[in-house]
Length: 197
Image 1: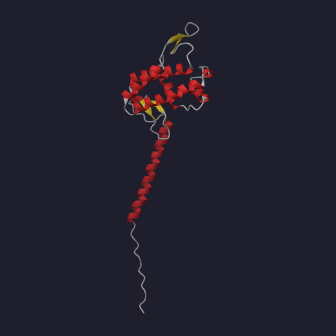
Image 2 (image 1 turned 90 degrees about the vertical axis):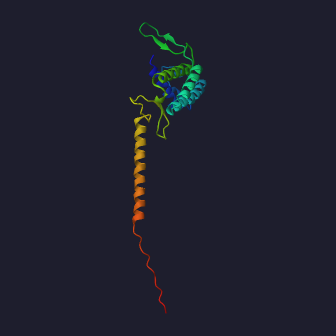
Image 3 (image 1 turned 30 degrees about the vertical axis):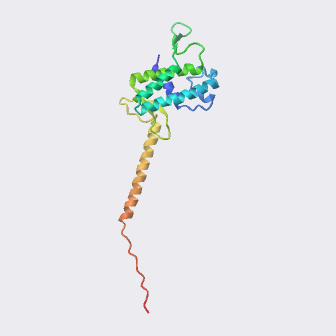
């Protein structure tokens, strides 16, 4: 089983808009993967799991590993793994994480929660991240060699760095203008003499 791929399905779910079934189907692994079987009930289950999985990432990103573990254990109970071997001919065997006939949400979420749990045990919850770009909020799995990633994508990193650069530049220009105003010699007021007469 590719646990990294399962963990990434959790990331995909947390980052996805889930306003309707078409958006849910866009999250599912492909057109052949039970897309047509997804129901409104599945959509409700996915939305609830999405909120809880976000909490796991937020706990991990803020150094609250015990809370991340507790939430994952609760999710494992709610979405249990029941592995079975499937396939149609020799050499094409693969493992499904739920029993035959399971709902789309049961199949997807069992794998996502299991993959994220294995990821936590392997790398620790400090590898769960929430994008540092305030306009984004997406979650990610930090695969950097020294656990230094702060953004979900290069796009967000660039956008955030450009915004910070512009803010520093604007602050410097404002400070320079303020300094020049303070250093400017005061123009003496000319007094007007009124003739005495």
